[in-house]
Length: 277
Image (cartoon, rainbow, N blue to C red):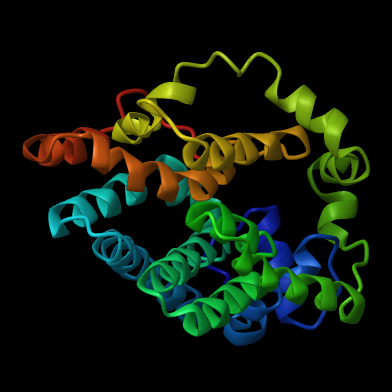
């Protein structure tokens, strides 16, 4: 890991990988640190495999919902082109957002196919990577059965108690300790003046088509995704991995099929300098 420039979140995963205690919610995300340890090759392998896994999951989800293969492929591109999915370089490859999103997409696809036992297994595994995965799975699938996965972080919270790690306590001149101790206040201070940033719109690309005549199945996941910003200082990395898949799934049903290629290509271009944090 010496050759990698890791951000605070990634360093905390390294602490956990070496058996150390970390602050909440990082203590709940035990699977990847346990499996990958501090081996950069393992983390890069998980990161690399997450892309085709997410893409295959979007195509499967589309086909299971009786969409065309072209709609499925376009949905995959729309999701994976989001800047927040790409994430900041300090989160690559040591991060949990992309792997958790990829596995959650496959869980939703399995449920759409009617393979609910597989869906439950996948969402439980996803919950060990990132504790909020069952919430997004249930919202994307619009089915509360996937909330069963929340049992996992509830158990981990008891077994693997959080502790104030050195990064949270001292890094960045005490900023992270303040974020930990005062999440709402620090979140509002961090997001001040950013709500009307044009990237709030442009960085969604063709996923914006999902808002055309939206239903509750689009509005609720998006609202919950943005609700995270009340207690979190990150923005795009959170909202894109939380609402991106469901918006892409419905966007490709609105965009005429002859325009899907153009929409996918336009989404792959960041019209303004992207912010991935």
